[in-house]
Image 1 (tube, helix red, strand yellow):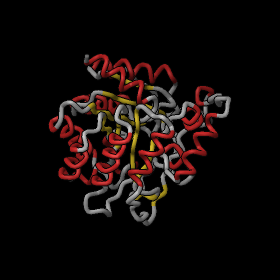
Image 2 (cartoon, rainbow, N blue to C red; image 1 turned 60 degrees about the horizontal axis):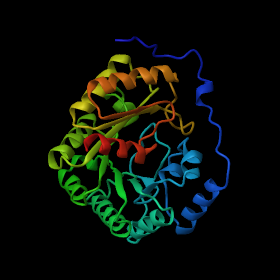
Image 3 (cartoon, rainbow, N blue to C red; image 1 turned 120 degrees about the vertical axis):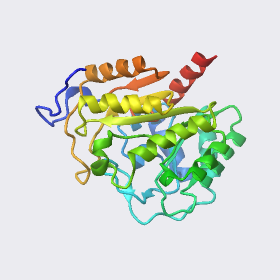
Image 4 (tube, rainbow, N blue to C red; image 1 turned 90 degrees about the horizontal axis):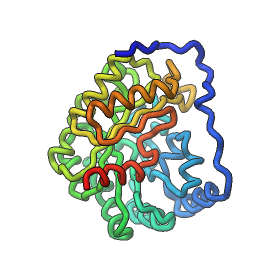
Length: 297
């Protein structure tokens, strides 16, 4: 096992974390279309570093159930506050936005809604069904919270038959008390296992961040645990501090190290692994899904 240093020599952003912004008008057009429909995206709410690239390619990851989360994870840029009232028209708004953007693979995520009786599962189901009804040739990927471990909530979203269900582990088990205080590493792993056992046709996806202080052995164990949960796709990306209120970056991981872990994960058995400084769960989601389907044909 490689022994990578836990600390960086400097916390100034290295050169590999500098991106050239795409040129052209597509970014502005995409943002304007989303603003007109008044629909939230995780691209904006979570301060994703890929927003310019994705909006310029006319892609976006929609965020439902409001923009205020009932949890306060140490790594996350989404606002933690009294949650918004659920917009009953949101499923149709998302579907209409996806149609206007001419999406062929629609990604939907949400804030965590521990305040709702079904933890938001029913709203996910309505959204998936609206998308599939309006865009009959499009595929749907949902990135779900842990639903507080409630199996009945998971059953609801599975019944809507999305093509991909993703749930991120986010970090190694040791760092959960610091990074995900109100979440459970065990609950999240169990949720991933249940998806595949309930519907083996669904592509299962998970991911986690590097740079929060995890050790090499912990990275390896997290990769192995996610694979053993039944996941098909794994994503690994660099943790970037969204604000001064969030956890600090302990180390910036160089691209060659991301490549090392990508090879480890592929050797473990994942059908697809995307690993790099700018990788996020929904990054190039359509290309990754299509690659998996071709492999299965």
